[in-house]
Each structure stands twice: as structure tokens, then as C-alpha cells.
Length: 262
Image (tube, rainbow, N blue to C red; front, top):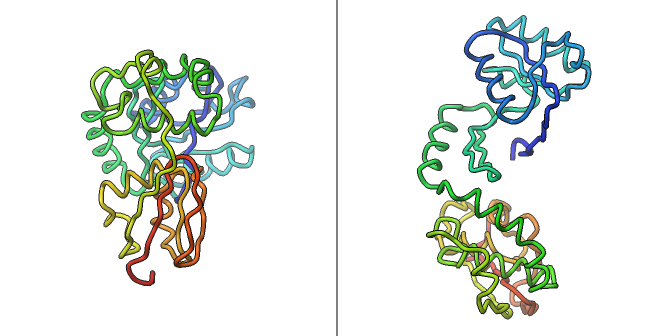
């Protein structure tokens, strides 16, 4: 990754905005939509700001303003000048409280916008209600599955394609899911054969398995780009060729290399 994707809570906090015109107004709307308060650099509350946006046409002026604010310890975004930015703003799909952010590191805002539009068409407007219902059901889930691992596996199964809570399905009902006969899955092993370091050549089924696996068992030399398709919290087990896969609850993905990775 070229950047660390994070979501910053503003909750009325001041955000410095320097500039005028259409670009500055777009940043003003973004700040206000996220709950922040746009202020000028000399505003009484400017000292409380943690981030700043600069929308100036002249590069020299933008560089000067960015240097001044960075010297004050702020993270700065300079419109259309990614080389001056500490952070970039993504294209956003808003299904509050679900936010989907698409970033290109400043390489192409047009590409990010095009991807956002595709996702707008794909993601149902009720997605936010599902997230809120899952938040409200946390205690109920803890009571039904006291073990954290069991709870996470049950939720993963429910949210999988075709599951009772499939986010792209028809009206997922969290209460009905909790009342259903949803038993914990025993140990499961799924094999993925890798013949290329390019993760785009994985089958859809293999990519989905990597994305929901509890642990990844893989031989030395497995391409990092393949391992990166797994969840960050999935356990990685590097096993020599021919070694037995440890049995454990949930899904273990066993990666097999069809040829030595370059």
C-alpha cells in the first residue's frame, strides 16, 4: 500500500481551509459533511486544528502555505498537487454508518470517481441499516457465541454470498439470523493452487476463501501479493512442503504452489 487508509472523526473540530473558488468550496462541503468546521489559518480556533486543506492555483503560494502549516504540525492536503500532500481524500460511497473510500494516491481522481459510481450502483441503500442492526446486536451475539472466534466465524458465514446476512442480498434480518439454527462450523480446509504471483489470476472462489479464512497455511516463497488478499488478522502459518496442516476451528486455506514463485 502507498498510504494508510484511516477514517478521522471530526465531531465539530476546526479544519483549516485556505483558498477560494470551486475547489475550495468542494473541500468546504466535504469538511462540513464529515462534521468538521472549516476555519481560516488565523481563526481563533485554528490552533486546535489537526488537518488542513489548501486550494490555491499558484504552486508557489500553495508550497508556502503547505510548508507553514506543516511546520505547525498539521497534516496537509493540497488540491491537485499530490507531491505536496500528507494525505489525499478518496472518492466516497456513503451508506452511513458504512463508508467506502476509493483512493489512488493522487494518481487519478477521475478513476476513483468512476469506481465510486460503479459501487454506488452495486451497494444497496439499506447497507447502513444492516451495519446499525449488527451494532445493536453485539450483546446478543456475545450471549449466543461467548467465544470470540466462534462469534467471528458465525458472522463471517452469515455475511458471505448467499448467507442469511449477505450485504447484497434481499433485506438481511439480523434478529432472524440470531434466532436461526446457526451452528458453529467445524474445522474446514480449503486448498488454493497458485501458479502465478499475480493475485488477479486467482479464481473468484479462491479469492473469496482467502478473504474469509481464519488462518493461511502456506509454503516458503509464497508470493506476498497472494498472502495480501487474506484478512490482516488471519493467522499465517508457514509450513514446509508436505507438512500436515494443524486442525483448528474455522476455515484454513492451504496454499499450494504449482511452480516455484519467482
